[in-house]
Image (tube, rainbow, N blue to C red):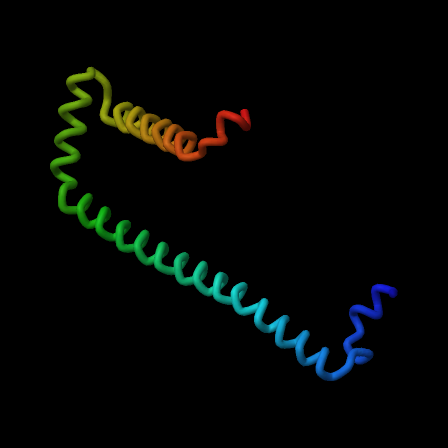
Length: 112
């Protein structure tokens, strides 16, 4: 049989056609459910991330004076400028982020 004979539904008996349509519908339900669950999980994740961002921003605003005092004290202890301390803190945070991503991916050692 040619490929077209499998694709053309008009050649099939009506009962077989109805059965195939039902099977296709039943197969599409789990796919739809999975897509729906993934969509809702992503939406929940975005909501949680936004709530965390707002909470962190609020905390930073409330403790801004304390953070500035800490940076001034730490910079003077190290004998560097505040901007240099901020650069070092940013570099350390970026390095930590990269390290955490590598630790979260167990295949990263095998890939390199």
